[in-house]
Image (cartoon, rainbow, N blue to C red):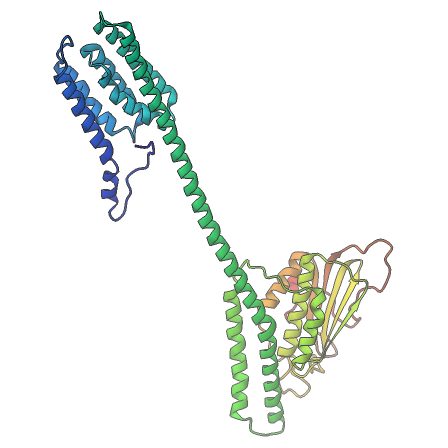
Length: 435
């Protein structure tokens, strides 16, 4: 018999489970009532014969015992009052203490030790008074023994209630720890799944995007040359060109699914730009890397943003510029870092159509991808400046200036790469052009 106050369970089969939980208390209450009634009927003289009120007091104790789990305080008060009055009227002896002992156990288990001690003391006082009056002529030792024995039973009931309370508290802690461990496992699994999803997105964007872009460019060049010579374009070549476009659309859609809003991948930094440029060259894009100024540690956000800017710019060169070469210039300056990516784009007039109007250059505005979106967000968040647009002499330029901390004291050296005089004025990232 515990002191928990949980209500009946609900749901399928919940009603049956609820009432079955209280069968033990109901059975105990019935047994106690039968025991007290039998004792009252068989009480030997000189005990007074029980009256109707005495039987009513016994019967009232039954519901009190049955409810001691859900309402331990009320059960204790009812049982103690009934049995105290019953003891004063009928002198039943120690059996009258049974309902009070049960409800004292329940009340202590519910944390009401003071109330249980007070109710027990009132009953013991009434019992001792009636026992002294009914035991005239008996040796004092017997009266003392009965009183000490009954007092010991009350102490045992209080100790048992305390143990039950501590046990229930321990079980609740175990359940809470188990639930917390389950939540932690679920969070860990979700975090690992998210990390794996982002890793796949990075791999797809870093590798497949470049490769598919090269396939599109080479197919476009072949189609352009065939049309320029007046030859019929093979259907297979047109199919390759269309398949490349479709693959890029599907890849972007896949990346959007893998990279949910708020996810923040951890790309490589400035130290890996050489590998990025080398991969671009391996796919057929002539590219160079120049680093000016004294290298120093960069804030993590700036380091990641530089890599993303260069990665997206090289991807766009391969995707939109046709036969082109690209140059990447990184310059460390006082308090800032300059990143510039230029390409010749095959355009001589800056119109985006190429010198012959064949349409293999920048014939349409590029569609923004995951990398470009991330680049714009990072530059704006870091308080940097971004310019992206056509070059007057042909081609395209992307130029970003990011805050990078102050140069160490006493350090001198080359200044960061600056825009050439003919380039348009730099604009804030919020109004910069697309690449």
